[in-house]
Amino acid sequence: MTNNRSNIINVYKKVVKSGDLQKNPYEVVKLILNELSRTMKILSEEIDKKNIYTINKDTQDLIIIQKSISKNVSRSLATIYSLQTSLDFDKGGSIATGLFQLYEYCRLQIISGFTKSINTGILKAREALEQILLAWNDMLQKSQAT
Image 1 (tube, rainbow, N blue to C red):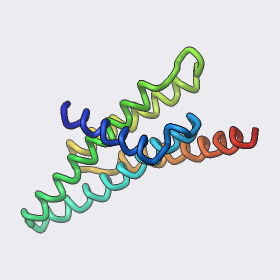
Image 2 (image 1 turned 180 degrees about the vertical axis):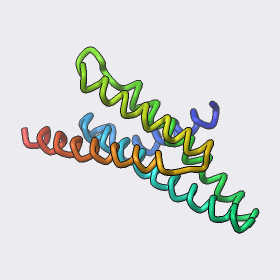
Image 3 (image 1 turned 90 degrees about the vertical axis):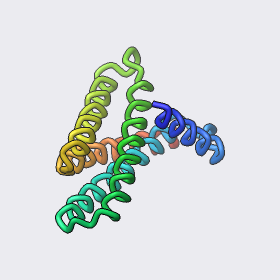
């Protein structure tokens, strides 16, 4: 838990340093969604590498890859947690509920992919997340037009 807390603090420091606190809420969520998509992509690629190195029995590279997988699982789960806890179910209604379910699906696929060393579910979850990112970009453009 301490590692996740330090990851969240580091993300917060990056946001403050980059001036993202001045952005509107749509831009901040877009930034977080992009980060989640990025870490899920890396995680998926690293699981593929791990499987290849396991077959080849290359233990030194396998250790490095496993560390990367662990780091990206932690980052992804911390990001999902922050997205889930930021939802306003009173104002967001069914949209907030749908987003929570999508984030939960992503979380479960990440955990399953990590424990089973299979990235198929992570790839499917990332595709769904990409659809949300497209919709979020549309909302961001509409909010900037007004």
